Image (cartoon, rainbow, N blue to C red):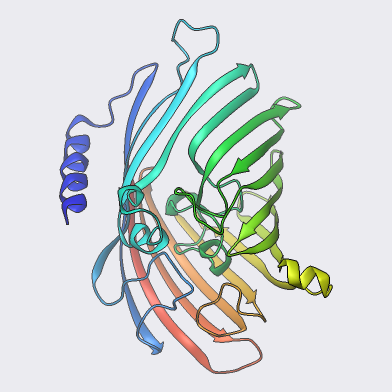
Length: 344
């Protein structure tokens, strides 16, 4: 409750000063409120989701306050960057529930050192280098996050080296991490490593991201790939595939491993500058129940959402979403969500 009071107070203060911005310092705020109502199957949220989990009441998925500076005007040969953001909401409660209570409201906390024109070294709590989706809804085509996004890192802590090539058309980074989505060290989640390389064209983005390290006493090798293509001004499509292989020392002796994979398709249609429509198909195949706590070895998801973008900083979103077991006609759960996203 104290965290809510503090963040709401600071949020109100931020609204009153309207995002003070100078050449060096920037203050911003973001809020994502929603109301989700079940109309089929189970009335509660599936336990393989960490965002938009409240039902039948007005809730906050994510409320965030952020301070950042790029140090561009500092009289330093190698300027420093800072990012610090605090958050609250149902996303924070669910996704950071295993963290130390002192860290559960940290969205981002990192410092970066610009080594050369295109090279940056960062350390601290960082946004994940994996996947298309982030915890911030206004960066996603769909109103809610996909199954695989909610079961992959949204954040990570460690050290990241980033660089760009070919006039910023190719971006790459290398990461040394404190395990799979951890801020505090955990006994069986030790150091992990990861990479990301992106090609960013005028209409096409290609991405490859990976993670290799410990996860609950086992070794995990994970890869995310996606292609985002803006076919024309009206139509856009995303094709994604996440896959993980997991094994222990005993499994390696027996030449045995376990894996899960998740293909994803998003199709967006722009009616005009204000209205956007998006359909999503997703499959989460987890035959060995490595991540899916619902005991469903295979889950199929369908969703359709309509966005009304009143401005670049204020969106209204409505989505209908269904989950069912693969190769079964029975709907496990279905719900409708109304969301409001705002940033300053």
